[in-house]
Amino acid sequence: MSTEASTQLKEAIHSSRLDRNFPKEVMKSHGGEKLFLCYLCGSCAGGCPVGRLTTDYNPRQIVRMAALGLKDKVLKSNTLWLCTACFTCTDRCPQGLEVASVIRVIRNMAAEQGIVPQVFKELGSNILETGLAYKIPDLRLKKREEQKLPALPVFDTKAVDTLLEATGFPKLIKEQTKKEI
Amino acid sequence: MTALRYAFFLGCTIPYRVTSYEVSARKVAAKLGIELVDMKDFNCCGLPIDPVSHDSMLVLAARNLCLAEQQNLNITTLCTGCAITLRKVNRMLKENKELREKINKHLKEVGLEFKGTIEVKHFAHVLAEDYGTENIKQHVKKPLAQLHVSEHAGCHFLRPIEYAGFDHPEDPTLLKGLIEATGARYFDYMDKTNCCGFTVIAIDDKISLHLTESKLSNMQDVGAQAVVTVCPSCFLMFDVQQPRIERAFGKTFNMPVVHYTQLLGLAMGMSAHELELDTHRVAAVDLLSKIG
Image (cartoon, rainbow over all chains, first blue to last red; front, side):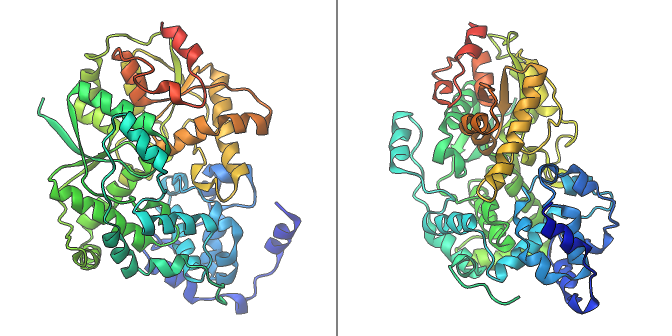
């Protein structure tokens, strides 16, 4: 762990910094409901494949920060995006807390604040443009013929865009300045 | 056996750069008599944007489910990410009336409605459960007894257990059974169910590559000659990224990566060329010489 991070951990947490509404917001979302059930056993952190390789990322810490209401800290945390969504933590939690889903809920909230890693902007704009997460190169499409594979369908991107417009997706991935959290 | 027909959900990663998986799966399915009906339209399953917007993932997945419902066919897919996403959303929408009504309101805008009439299964799940591992053995003409392989099932093949729900996530046996049906020798290794790291390669490539490196090392330690995968994204990590991993960690693996559909195809008597095994980054020449 970097010195900076370990110093931060040792800081006293002042109640004035806590946003008591934040855990409630997390618990309103699908997958976040059991946030308060965490009893800090560390099964999630122990089983986390990323946590083994870097002490920067620790699912237990993220869950605890969220439960305490350290909203700005958890939303702005770079390590929030290191979860591979392997769901080992979710499956091993003795309290039935969907740890990986809590992290997804928090990521979604960060995205609402304008924090979206570049890769998701790319995947997202590909979906809006073509219906698929990757733009299939013409060479590949031509090769499909040689391989005697069926041509890909003509995707109804209009339907995809209509659906994603309804969920507010395009504005989430638009380049924007981060809002003040 | 009743006729097995499925809506074939291709996803994004396979047409983008893992067509050897598609080619081999289509050939194996045809020979086994499993009909894969190409969907006339579909879109990304939704998983890649779940971290940014859960609701967006839900509507994308739901649209795919509706399109398959219109074909009146259960879905099968080669991708573990697509499988878990479509399985999960299918169940969520079937069980949660409030959510279904909310999503259906969006779907109505594009002339669709989720009815909850179909099921979703990964193709390996179809092979093991619907077709039956025992029946697969009947098609094995050339048992691969000389091959020593390890599996990498991939996280979303096994987890979260609530939605994957057909194998033990800590001690899985489904893929093992399918591999052994080909006659190949199966090698267990430490941390078998660990993640390959694909999903974070664009966030932190060092961590991502390190995850696959650990798995390759553990497989090598037990004497595996190849790794069998059932996911295009895991395949990209193990095969396409393998030379980069070797350079970064100063190691030599030279570990061929074989889609399960290729392993089965070989055992059924198809050639490596037919199964596009010769298109992979890590050459399988030594491996193939073992089976003659």
